[in-house]
Amino acid sequence: MNFSIIIPAHNEENNIEKTIRTIKKDVLGNYEILVVDDHSIDGTAKIVIGLTKEYNNLILISNTKQASFANTLRAGFEKVNSDIVIPVMADLCDDPQDINKMYEEIQKGFDIICGSRYMPGGKKEEGPKLKSFFSKIYSLSLYFLINIPTHDIANAFKMYKKKVVDSVAPDAKGFEISVELPLKAFFAGYKISEIPTVWTDRKEGESKFRVSKQSLGYLWLYLWALKRSISLCLKRNK
Image (cartoon, rainbow, N blue to C red):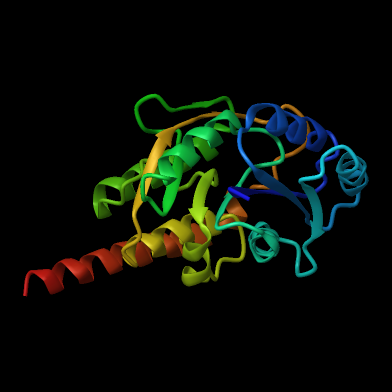
């Protein structure tokens, strides 16, 4: 097994089949797909169960803890059967073909490969303007202020070596887990790279991300990263 794809899914019956079939069509290599059902009350789980009869590398598991993006990812991380893992959103906002490029890049010795919408060649299409503004300012300011080697730390589309996930042991409760993992890995000395990606807003269903609910978690991590960076600079200059 070369790598594992985790798809967090909460009420994604209108998207999940298309996402799985697109991944199977576009992603190369020996991999597994773990769909983690996050307390869905629609037909998400039933659709995935039906597809497991067609795809022997497709697995359905459940988030048995409190419903949240972070807990859903943790449930997936605990069940993967490979040393490399990548979360992919169930609404197909990310291009699965980029997974092939990420896997090639991680073979060069990197520990995390970030899909970047804000580096040259990357792009973010459509989507709520406030969310886009927040994401871009947040990511690019950290890139310049702490020199983390990705222009897009806010993007959840990242490939990790499993040892990084295990060693960082994130505490996040929500979507900010996608920031916490690379930030803590960066300060722990892990090697990070990025590739340009194009993000497209969902066509079906409703986004689970709410700026008002998630902002405190992102703010705390932002301030933590700045404090940690300043502390390290002061130590080096002593």
